[in-house]
Amino acid sequence: MHVHKLPKMLYSYSEGWSDLISIHPSVTRMFTMFVMPMSLIPPAMFLYSMYVTPGAIFPAAVPQITGFEATLLFVCFYAAQLVMVPLMASVIQQLGDVANARPDYHDAFMLAAVAPAPLWLCALALFVPSAWFAVAAMAVAWVASAALIYHGIEPLFKLEDHSRSRLLGSFVLTTGVVAWLALMVVLALLLSMIVGLR
Image (cartoon, rainbow, N blue to C red; front, side, top):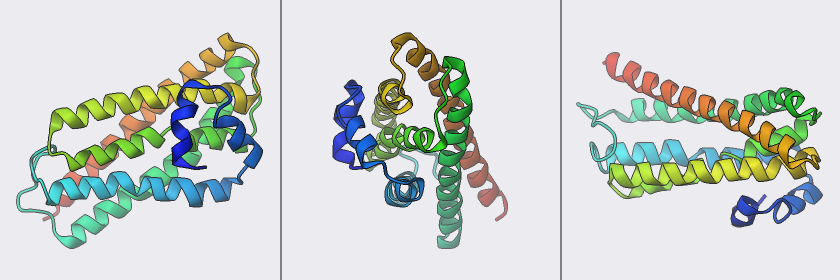
């Protein structure tokens, strides 16, 4: 899976998706070669914004978090993302019943791994010390993730009915939003615990 194929996958049911299906990477390979490196971006950029531009996007921690606290926050946030992808794959597999689809775990995992790619990449917007820019980037990333979900379900799960794939896509997107919000709550709790334990 190459990031440069993502733009085609946003608007096509075949472009990029057919390549992914023909390559048929194993769950382990997809996890280690795509999910793990992409999941590094948000925690790294979060720490960058806290150290380099404190208070510009997120409230500044006073006093600034230590190296040990930053490492702990980074590891926990990274681990939470890594757990979320296989968990979402299991949920997507179960949601297949909504559209009378029976996706195997491998196909559900491919969707769960590809769909959050724009959200991972939008963390790079934190290089710009502007909360408005970060919010705009997040909005664009959510639209892109939704497009990946809607265009990926049909080829990955071999659905020929657009209405069934849209129905399943809506359920997957809603579940993804809930999972993302849960991840943000986990991050906020981790940060408050670290600051509170000082």
